[in-house]
Length: 130
Ligand code: HEM
Image (cartoon, rainbow, N blue to C red; front, top):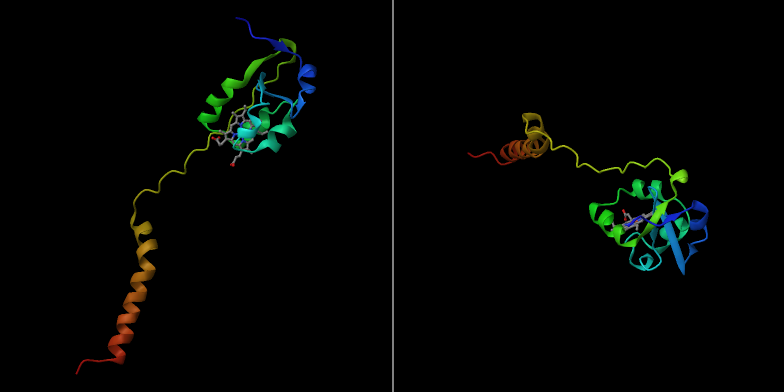
């Protein structure tokens, strides 16, 4: 079935607690019921209600779970002549693991080993065995 099409003007009025819709990448979501359950809070959705929230949604770096979840709230799309370019999602890559090296080993174990050596020297100086 063809999706329901909305103009951006039509969405603008849905900007309050009783009726809230947002646009993300030209898809229209009804977030009225979802607002209370939103892990990011009610306010951020309410502030963006009636507007295009593509940039905000992408900036937060929403997880795949969020992407799946939002499908439940789709009510239509923006009319063809008012479509905007999609905003790329920032996928947060974990930093690459540091390869094992002598330098990293020394960085971790160097200071405690030096301290232990010094303590041994001081001890043998203070309490020399006969
Ligand atoms: C239907 C649309 C949306 C869904 C289903 C959704 C879902 C979620 C989920 C599941 C999280 C928890 C973190 C994660 O798993 O990514 C989250 C966090 C958050 N969301 Fe949304 N969200 C939606 C729209 C938005 C929009 C439009 C904004 C901004 C305008 C927004 C701002 C935030 C913020 C600020 C957090 C908290 C991030 C943090 O604590 O680090 N969300 N959202």
